[in-house]
Image (cartoon, rainbow, N blue to C red; front, side):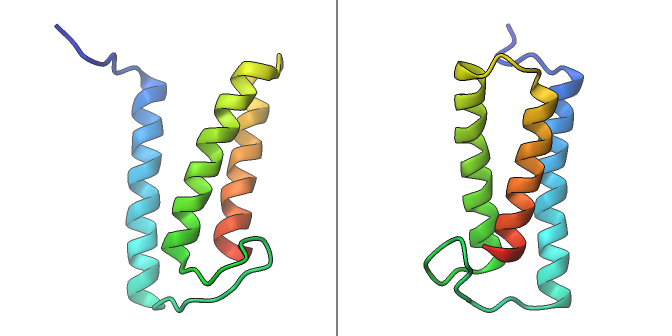
Length: 91
């Protein structure tokens, strides 16, 4: 009995999250982060905090998209990538 069906999109999703975590770790080792207040998130955060907030925001956006928008998910993917990148870099 399988509790989860591992399809290629599922594997890519989890590999991307793992890659983000590895990339953030390397980035932290090369250039240690410092808390700063961005122009989108009105509190002092680190890069890791902003990544976590971006992943949460993308999960909520995905749920809303699936419920309300009849367009293909490829547009959603582009929107989520831009959202997370903007939050991590400028948040």
